Image 1 (tube, protein in one colour):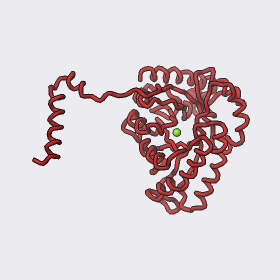
Image 2: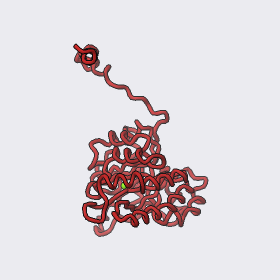
Image 3: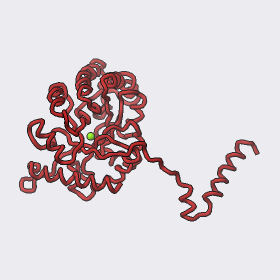
Image 4: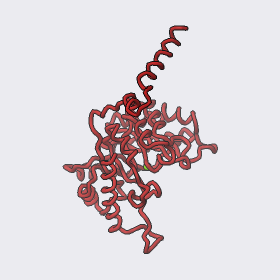
Length: 315
Ligand code: MG
């Protein structure tokens, strides 16, 4: 018998000796033990700007602080540039952090000039986010079928995003103390980036200034395990979106809204980023063409905060 195959055989035999007794206790002694993260995780609940009750900037931030939120998510586009100084002033002295800026993006245009225009559009937005100490700019690298002429797809798109568009945005973000945060979507929205692990790999390949996020709504269709998906994001996981799992509305309306498995993954990572509600409102039973009005929205927000805190404790 050759030395290598002898060693292989011995290793297997050794495992059999240790774990072979067949009892549950013996099996337990063979289980890997998980190391607690250096810093324990925190549930930092967050709302997107247009979901926060109140009209004026300070009213919205007051609402968040008074109702158990720890972070705020703002719109992308021109919003961060136009509101940078006012936000810096309004956030001063508050126990809130500025999570991400969220808005549309697409880097799959086959025409180089269009991709370049998209990069140029985001550079000043990134600078404003850096000034506000935001976690980063959410980027969905490519949307649509990407199969018609006019779009990059597959390895060409990945190569261009990793080596050109995505990398330049990430480098700019890193220079300004923030990041770009890649968001995996559903298959009907993009064939390019659908899973947290894939986003983490792209972020790793791009390097400093690039991170990944997970959105429970997309993840439930695209991932086999919330826990597994979050763990595969590892240290690169910087943001989480959450919505009802049966319907993309505020969590807590349907009994299917169970996030315990995902929260376990976040706890194992020592995750301290935001968990931000992204979704709609239920319809008003009295007027089914319209969403519920503000008093009911406030009740639903409070209900969500209670539910998510309970499920975080259970995880
Ligand atoms: Mg999302």
